[in-house]
Amino acid sequence: MPLDNSCTDIDKELIVRCTKYDRKAQRELYERYSSRMYSLCLRYSKDKESAKDVLQDGFVTVFTKIGTYKGIGAFEGWMRRIFVNTALMRLRKADIFNDIEDISYKAASDEDIAGDVGGKEIMKIVSSMPAGFRTVFNMSVVEGYSHREIAGMLGITEGASRSQLSRARLWLQKRLSELNMTVE
Image 1 (cartoon, helix red, strand yellow):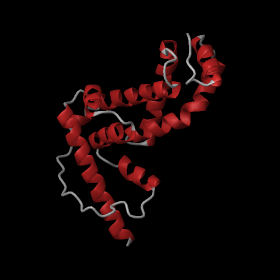
Image 2 (cartoon, one colour):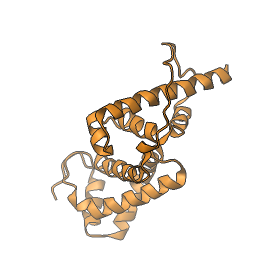
Image 3 (cartoon, one colour):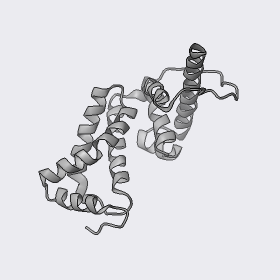
Image 4 (cartoon, rainbow, N blue to C red):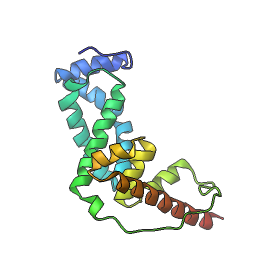
């Protein structure tokens, strides 16, 4: 498998060894990427245990399909797509889009809604979003997928994706406003 220059020498070696089912190489690859992939899994999961399950399933898929990596683009990006898809499969099985709350919020003013809230606090609030909101928010805002891509991956319409993102933003604004009111 020809690997391009976007792949580090360490990754190239690990990939080749993993395609030969080298357990030590698989362990090294896991140790190299597990914390980053776990963070991604947490964003799509309702709790730490679910995130660990997604992480496990994702690595099983990585090791099973590593021979299909063509060496085009970053290896970590290839892995991220696997983990996002693994998380989405679990969410589809849970049928999260048929269990979405009908929530509507009035948009906040143009003032700085985040105030003094830090990134970790914002991510904690995002993790408490209803699953449908959280999924579309992560896919759009964090991962950078288009509404067309999100719709295709989740089996929903582009309009539903846009609606979920809009509702997620309003939901987040409301929570940040409430947090700022209690801090002040």
